[in-house]
Image 1 (tube, rainbow, N blue to C red):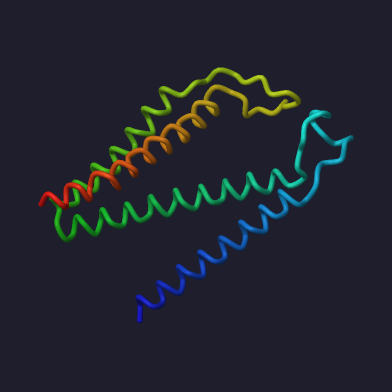
Image 2: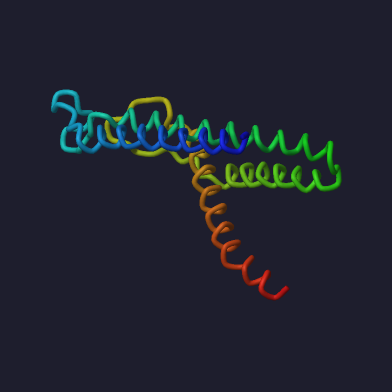
Amino acid sequence: MAVTKIHRTSRLTLYVGILITLVVLGLFYLGGQVPAHEKLVAEMSQPKFTDIVLYWAYVLLAVTVVVLIGFAIADLLRGFKENPKKALSGLMTIVGLAALLIITYMIGDGTLLNIPGYEGNDNRPPTLKMTDMWLYSAYVMLVLTLLAMIILPLIKRKK
């Protein structure tokens, strides 16, 4: 009964997320261009609904991070109740992720960008370093995932 409810809720959440994403991408690609008098840079293409795409990406990122942290903490607390020694390995995963974020933030480049027509306050070194942090972390996790997909089956065959 509970598993069916979880599957139903997961499926509904996935479908709603896909539907919203398709609507947002449809607006972005088919919504036209900003009128010429409102463009930041006259000769550049500027879709009307760029802000909506960016805000949707922020929402998806925030939900992902909150859910990831929530499940990690819940799993850690449950693990300490059931098997404290095994729970420490879960804690090491969280520490490893924190170390990855700190290292990738430190190697990020804070050099100001030359962005035509942009006069906002997000072109500052801390924001640029944080952007690099997320990109580098995503690259590292992608490589680790691909390596795990290749190496783990080989290890299981040997056993």
